[in-house]
Each structure stands twice: as structure tokens, then as C-alpha cells.
Image (tube, rainbow, N blue to C red; front, top):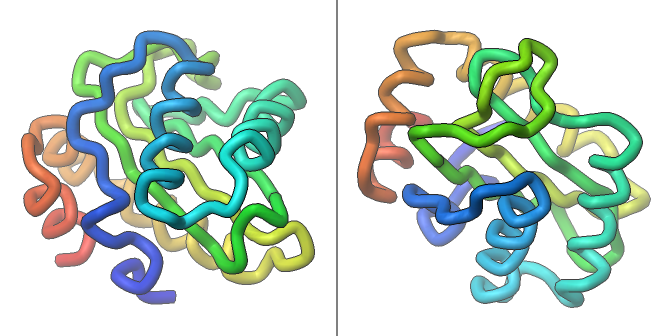
Length: 148
């Protein structure tokens, strides 16, 4: 899967303002709504929050990958958001999360979602790339780091 097909510049949030896990998810869902990528904000928000209640998507190394399945999207949608100082996202390693990749996929399709997560996980396995992302200040910088 080509990241450029899923991750577009209008879905990059370089200066996340939220301070709590629910607020992070809401701020990112709001961006999807403003971009016209979701049909129903509340349905999309509920899908991600419900998934998050089952088990935290705070991973390790400052990464969180909140996600949900919903009929509010026709195909995979993804947002990357950065909060350099990080926030508590109940990560596996107990450390704050500063890189957030939120995905929404149609309830009846899993293939593209899994492919995207595999590709983004491989990229974010690079400590230098993670550091570049947390230091990036613009949409263009983040996009170029991820698609180079």
C-alpha cells in the first residue's frame, strides 16, 4: 500500500492541542469531519472510543494508533497528529505518546487497514524517523518524512 494514497496533507495535524486521550481522539475526528472524510462525526467518534475502551492503543516508543471500524467511511481514512511533549495514552511501556495515527475503516473491510498499519509500523520502528516527526513543525515536513 502506498502511504501517499491514504495519508494526505489535509490529514496531518502537526500541533495537536489536546491534553487527554479522549480529547486527542476528538480533535483528530474533528479534522476528519472538517475535511469531509466522514459521514457522521458521532458514529466515527464512538467507534474509536469504544475500541479504545476494550484495550488501549498506546503502543511503545511514543506511538499511539487509535482506530475504529464504522460505516461513517467508505474506505480507509488515516490522520497523523503530533504532540512533541506527549500525553498519557495508557501506552504499553508507560511512556507518553507523541505520535498519533488514527485510522477509520469500513466495518466490513479489514484488508487495507491491516496493510496500512503494517506499513506505518515498519516506518515508525525507526527511532530517527520518530525523532524527526516529533521535531517537525509543518504539514509539509511531516508528509515528506513519511513519504520519502
